[in-house]
Length: 94
Image 1 (cartoon, one colour):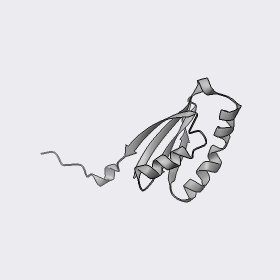
Image 2 (spheres, rainbow, N blue to C red; image 1 turned 45 degrees about the vertical axis):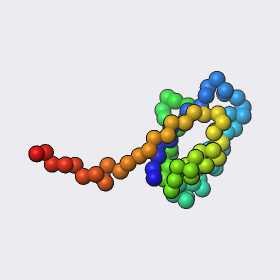
Image 3 (cartoon, rainbow, N blue to C red; image 1 turned 90 degrees about the vertical axis):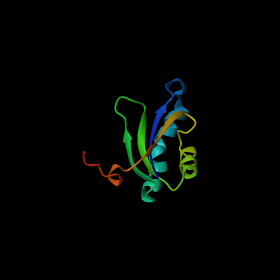
Image 4 (tube, helix red, strand yellow; image 1 turned 30 degrees about the vertical axis):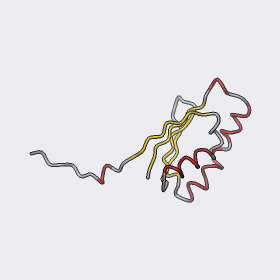
């Protein structure tokens, strides 16, 4: 199961603690990338947050991984399930 997770920092909560959480994101991500649980991660230009593509076995696994994120308590998350468009061949016009 793949998910696009968009996370945004709550700027009203910006503090030294939040900045530290953001700097810990790469060390959180590296093992997940090695395990294939995170396929890609991006910064959203002009925004305070990121876009990550998770590849997990279940909704529960995704929830657990998000809860372990250093920014979990400081960010809002939009979780979007992804479906492979190649798995659904186009129907020819009739």
